[in-house]
Image (cartoon, rainbow over all chains, first blue to last red; front, side, top):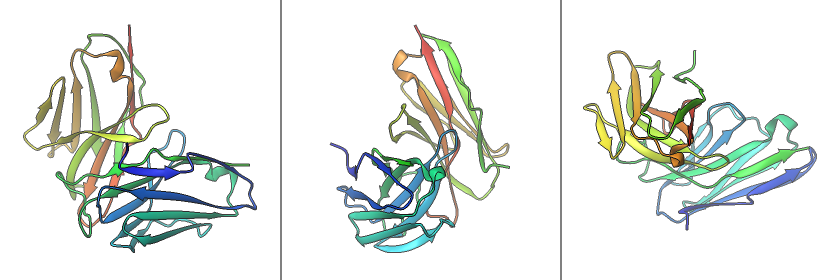
Length: 118
Length: 110
């Protein structure tokens, strides 16, 4: 059983739809992340939450809206997406407030949500 | 210029071969270094951390050269199961998340 679970695993949505991706971590971590992985591109950091507070927003368009109701759950709300937003969206978590990742404190990923925008 | 650069490959090697990947990083304010492995259509998973003195984990050896700003991963006696994409990962002072390279794809052939 993975420590970070994401649902749904696959999502197809139209450009006018509103949907949400959900992430839950069972590791007792204090920081959670959303990453985007497009074909042949490096993982791109989207958002970082530490102790439920958003500490980093990596210039992500407003059609992506994160929500972190508590330290175990993270959502990514999707609204009026574009076809180029089709990608693998990965949630991750790490230990420690502030969660400056270090040698002894790496991050763990969920299995990802494959999003296709049509 | 990308902050973390890797040769995308693919590296096609026979079973039993030794293969090495390099990764260069451009920002000297780097703190920690990792190699992650990502199988096709799966999430990245930590393979190993990279220590200044170099470190080994079974068939895998990681090296760090801060002066030249690169890290390397050496895989000895390649197995079919080593086929994957290997991601070079760096953390930077003041940033709260990892910075990933695009990955190097390895295909081990029978």
